[in-house]
Each structure stands twice: as C-alpha cells, then as structure tokens.
Amino acid sequence: MATPLRSLATTALRQARAGKPSSVRAPRSTLRTTTTTPPSRPFTATAAAAVSSSSASSSVKTLIEDRDSGFGFVRHNPAPPKPRTRSVTEIRGPYYTVMGPRYLSDVLETMGPHVDGLKFAGGSFSLFSEAPLRQLIDLAHANGVYVSTGGWIEHILASSGGDTGGAVDKYLAKCKDLGFDVIELSTGFLSLPPDDWVRLAERVREAGLTPKPELGIQFGAGGDTAAAELESIGTSDPSKVINMAKRFVRDVGVERLMIESEGITENVKTWRTDVIQSILKELPLEKVMFEAADPAVFNWYIREFGVDVNLFVDHSQIVQLAGLRAGIWGKSDTFGKITTYRP
Image (cartoon, rainbow, N blue to C red):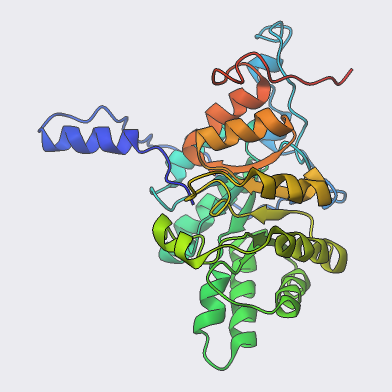
C-alpha cells in the first residue's frame, strides 16, 4: 500500500518543535451524526435494487454540476449518481494517519459525492473502542458510503488455532454488528487453496455481508515490505489472478474485486502495465477496482482507461482524483485531455 501525503502532520510537528502555535485548524465542537444505526450501504447498483438511494450525498449538487447558480457552464465530465458500478472511488480510512469523526465529517461534507467506499486498512478498526468506530461507520452510511474491512481476515485465519471456522464466523458476526458492509478477503501473506478462498467468500455472503477478494501477483504484499525483499520473493503469473477472479465472479457472484498494487505499480522498478491490460482483457471494467494510492498511478489509470475505471486511493487524494475524473485538472499528460461522450 502506498504511503499517503503527510504534509499537514509534518507541518504541525515542525511547528510544535519550534515552539510555534500550530496552523492546523482546531476541530469543531459540534458534529452532525446519526443517532440510530442506518441501513448498510450497497456495494454496487445491482445490490442497491431494493435499497433507497435517498442519502444526503447522492442528492447534493456540486457547483461544477449546477448550471443555474454554479459553475455548470464550464465543460466537465458529469459523475454518474451513486450507487454506481463504474467511476467508483474507495478511500483508505485510518492506517498511516488517524481518522476521527471530525476529520471524516470534513471529508464527506465537502467531497461526499465523489466517495463511494471507506476502507479500514488491515485490522485498524480493532484498535478503536466501539463507540467512536460505530460513529465513523454511521457517518459514512449517512453520506451514502459503504464501509469495508481491510485484509485482516489473513490474521484471523493464521492465528485462530484449531477452530478456524468458529473464529471466522465470530469475526464476520462482529463486523456485521458494527455496521460493516464489505469484507475484504486478501491472501497476500498466506498460501490458501483456491477452493478454500471461494468457500470463504461464500461464507461471507451467507453472513449477510459482501465479499471483496483482493488479488495480486506479489506474495507478501500489503504490509509495507521492502521492495528488495519483495523482488527476491518473485511474482506469480498474471493468469493465476485472472483465473481466480473469473471463479469468484462465476461461482460466488462477486460484484467487485480489488487488484493489489504491489508487484504491479508499487515497489517495482518498472510498472507491470501488461498485467493490468491482461486483467481488463478478461474481466469487465466494473468488476475490478485497482489500488492506486499514488497520484502518478491514478493519473495513469484515468489517462489509459478513462473516467470509468474504479480506483482505491488514500483519503488525502480524493480532491485530486475527483478533479481528474471531472476533467477540470490534471498533470501535463492529462490536463484538458480527460473527456467523455454521453449525449
């Protein structure tokens, strides 16, 4: 997973060491949250068929879309309404930096229409006390954002002793009780037989949750392992990822798969764009989400595949990605070049 921008934290730390007052704004004393647990958010439009889409952020009109009193006269690429199957953006929650309800409220009050999912990387959510964790999950739901675990299932499988099935069931039950919608199923550090991986996805669905398998070509991915160590381990053939992805879609009805960036665009000397092309040659665009928590990486994805590609980025990068999707900003190779044709 790529390291996010840390400029605000670095500035505050530098000011503290120098004895200067911090320029970082103090949190507001009030916060809009829900008082009751709202229904889970759908993962895709297909799952949303029986769910009301009256969430606050899905009905909010951004200034760039407001032709009457905003900037709607400026050429831009309109975003499809939520819930959507393409142009989906999932953001990383607390992991490299903390995220409390005040910060998440700021993100969603300003950028909520551009955020589809919130992921608690790894087992970060287990480090919270229950009340503030529920507050974050409820806040996401109130803004039409689904909530996903990270790949902590690997720890559950590897450390549950002789009752692996019981540990998995308890894990899923607690995640559902807390309000999680999506369970990520990664095996970056594990050797798990394909049949067992499929069985795990089926178990997640039986528990009333949405499975999101994470696949990649790099063993040892997902834990900030040094590039040299990953290179010494080697990578898998892309066909292994493609065959497993097809099986998840065919046998379990998985709605979307996450493609791990390590070994492809992260911790490599040269990007493996051939792997990406191979995946999209065999799988529909809406069935795949690419981890792209680096501006150069998500700029490349949008340039190569257009605004419809589904991406996972850090919470600090949502404004930059939203501007790139809208075609109102970009790098030298994308500025003024990202367009759509949807008469």
